[in-house]
Image (cartoon, rainbow, N blue to C red; front, side):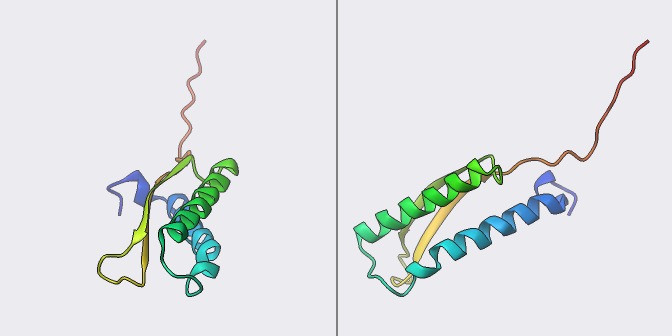
Length: 100
């Protein structure tokens, strides 16, 4: 798909795949061990924000914001997180101008 820079380069999809894997691994130990309460959701939000900060600090992403971490309204035994990520843009071309 060449319609957008976000999907036409492997670098962007690799970064997104790494972020998804990293976050899933970071939240894995919380699933199935706790009841969904407001304190639990606050704890998960804090963990998630920490992971986003780690990804930012290590230059994997430019920035990441957690929009929400809530209990799913349809499947009440699930939680839903939504994040906005700003990914780095790969340098695909370099233009050089020489003047005399």
